[in-house]
Image (cartoon, rainbow, N blue to C red; front, top):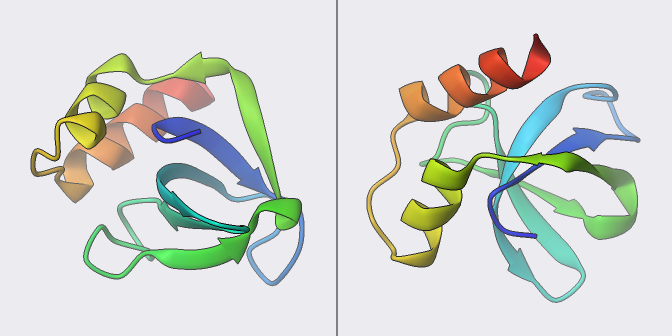
Amino acid sequence: MTGMFAISKAGHDKGRMYVILKEDGEYVYLADGRIRTVENPKKKKKKHIQPVKSGIDEALAAKLKSAQTIYNEEIKFAIKVRAK
């Protein structure tokens, strides 16, 4: 699931789109580049998100898998392009 887009299904952020940064058991760590940055990702249970199957940002996924630095601007741009 790492690198996929996900939409929050529950909580005060319901309906917001994120990028999944990493998985940890039943939790995922999400960032949107604005409120939830790479430095401070949101920890959310997998059952509270809806992964978007039709889109993975290949550049972000490759960076996450190779443990390269990801910038908030890259996440914001990927979400903006995906939302169109």
